[in-house]
Amino acid sequence: MPTFSSSFLLLPYSSALLQSKDPRVIIREDPRDVSVYIADYIISRIKLFSPTPEQPFVLGLPTGSSPELIYKILVQRHRAGEISFKNVVTFNMDEYVGLPRDHPESYHSFMYKHFFSHVDIPPQNINILDGNATDLVAECASFEARIARYGGIELFLGGVGPDGHIAFNEPGSSLTSRTRVKTLAYDTILANSRFFGGDTDKVPRMAMTVGIQTIMDSREVVIVATGAHKAIAVQKGLEEGVNHMWTLSALQLHQHPLVVCDRDATLELKVKTVRYFESIEQAGTDARTQGPALVYRPRTYVPSPVQVKTPKSQQPTPDGTPEKVPKDLRINTELHRRALEEEELTPDSMSSRLVDSAIGGIDGALKGDLMFDRMGTRLTTL
Ligand code: GLP
Picture 1: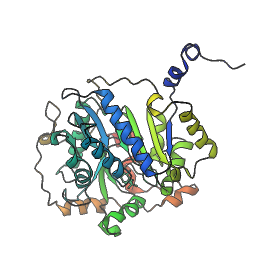
Picture 2: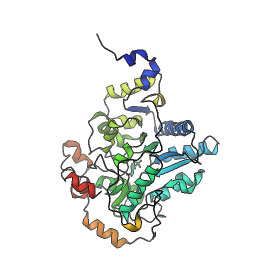
Picture 3: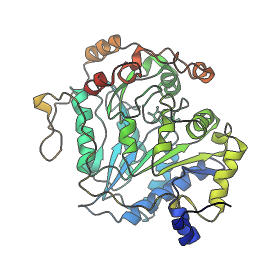
Picture 4: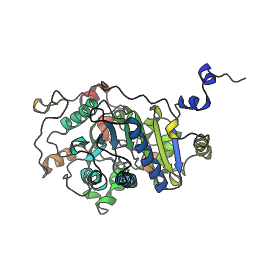
């Protein structure tokens, strides 16, 4: 005879589901329905939070083609008077290194074009990594400090790369990583070349990105995955084990993850998996009522310290805001070229990893996160 925990027996059905810690997956027919679902979800979360200037809603945001429609819907709903972003503070996931801020493909440009210019968010509430900072390491440390100052991120919206990366946490990234500079994997350069006229040479080789741990520390994570080209990443992330070669899979360890897929993105999942997740939704609940009860973070929340060597001149000020760093948007390309020469590109490809080449797929380019190096080394060279 099956045994049930007393808490399960005592709780009404819907409350029992509230205690569930299963990963939540919502499947919709196409990208439009996925985007509507996620926009609704974000709006309902912000409204539930009732943000104020003293206690703003802290929202993590991605770029990429997948979230474009979500932004469009959020803008429409804002214009319709349904939602205000006045008391929302945003942190973007990532930014290219060395691409001028006003370049059309910089993530700064993307965010203003698709979202920030169309809503009422105050400019001082927007946080995007400065890929042209004179000291990139200090910029990463300051970004983490700013997140901590706001008491952590309430909801991190993210996309996923065809190779399973979230933000720019490429295959091989440490699952405990924090905001840092990463060399882009060849798969990502290929995938993102579509934004640079199909010319891989024009795609920056490096980026700054929040780490997996930065994402894991947020109270909720919502991932958008649409299209058949994301199906393998979704399968690896949901059905297989936690694996740094498919960094999406780290969310299996998160308390409140939500993956919203279109039908095409489920193509590699087992029928059994799809039916299971559909049955959860059909049981009369949706993502808003699944997962552990929502308890907002105390403002005192501080993630584990970022261990970086910060030059004295760039130490965060006592209130956590970064000291003004002279910004030259006409970047010193020499600096970045030198950095590139020091870190070669990853010659792996997703298909090679699909066989069994988890090892073959890694190379020195990801040395900051490699499993072969000593953990002690990584602590000081984030
Ligand atoms: C880039 C971004 C990721 C994004 C991914 C997928 O690599 N750094 O944050 O999730 O692209 O983008 P898309 O939605 O265009 O497929």
